[in-house]
Length: 434
Image 1 (cartoon, rainbow, N blue to C red):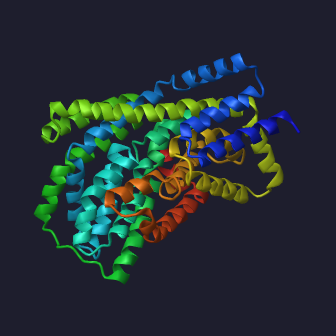
Image 2: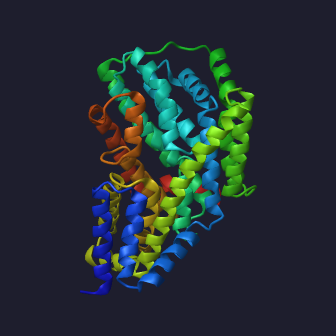
Image 3: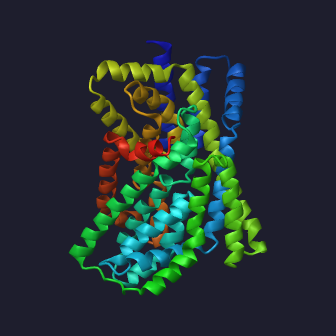
C-alpha cells in the first residue's frame, strides 16, 4: 500500500475517532496532524515543522481583520443595534400575515450582515424576538428554528469572517472584495426562501397579522436604524472601491461601532473591559483553529492529497454534475459535525483544485462551500447555531428539529441553485469588474 494512502487513512481515522470521543475540533486536528507527520518525518523535525506551519499559518495581514470584526460584532451586540433593526424590520413587514416571522428573518439578515457573526445574530435577535413572537401565538420551537436558519445569512452577506478565511485558504485565487460582493445575492436568496417557508406556515397555521404602521412611523424607525445600516455601505463600499483593505475596513468597523454605542448611550466606558475580554476569547479560539487547520492543510500538500483527490474524482466520475453533487453532499455531511472555520481551511485545499479543473470559478466555489457549511451550523450533532438558537429560546434541541426541517430544506434548494447557476454568485462581481 502506498505511503500516501496509509497517511491519509491514519489522518482521517485518528481525526474522526478523536471527534467521536468529544475532543475539541482544534485539538483533534492538531493531534491527528502530528501523528500522521510522524509516519513520514523523524520526531524532532516533525514537531518543528508543525510548529513552523502553525506560526506561519496565521502570519497574514488579511487575518488581522478577524479580531477587529469580532470586536465590532461584540460592540454592536451590546450597543442597542439589534432593537433598532428589529423595529425597522417590523415597520416594513410586521403588518403581513405572520409578520413577526418575516421581521425575525429580516432583522437576523441585517444584524448578521452588520456584525459578521451568526452566533451574535442568533443571540441578539433570538433573545428579543422569541418572547414577542410567543405573545402573538408563535410556538417557541418554530421561532427558534426561524432564528437559527436566518442567522446564518450573515456569513454570506458581507462583511464575513468566514469569507476572509476562505480567501486565505484559496491561496489568493479569490479576493476578499470579490467574495464579499458575490455573497449578497445568495444570502438574500436564502432569506427569501426562508420567508416563503414562513409564509406557508403563516397561511396554514393562521398566525397573527401585526398592526399596519403609518409612513411617519416607518420613516422614524428607518431614521433610527440608518446609521447602523450605513455601516454596511461604508465597509463593503470602501473595500470594493479600493479605499481600504478588508483589514483596514475591520478597524473602521470597530471605530464606527464604538461611536454608535456611545452615541446611543448603550455602551459605557466601564463596559469596554468586558467587551474586549469577550472579543479576545473568541479571537483566541478562532486563531487556534486556524493554526491547527493550516498545519493540516500543509500536510495535505506534503502528501499530494489534493492532486490525488482531483485525479481520482476526474478518472472515476465522468460527469461534472456528479462531481459537484458529490462535493456538495460531502460538505453537507462535514458541516453536521465540524465548525465552519476549520472545515473551510481543511477542505478548500482538497476540493478547490478539483472544481477549478472542471472550470468552476474559485469565488463561486467559495460561496457554495460557505452556504453548504451554513446549513451544517443548523443541524445536529455539532451545529453551533442550532444549540445557540435553542438555548436562547429556552427550548430543547429535540423540539426544534421538526419545525427546523422545512427551513433547512429551503436552504438546500437554494444551495443547488447557487451551485449550478453560477451567475447567482458571479453576476455582481462581474458587474463591478472584480
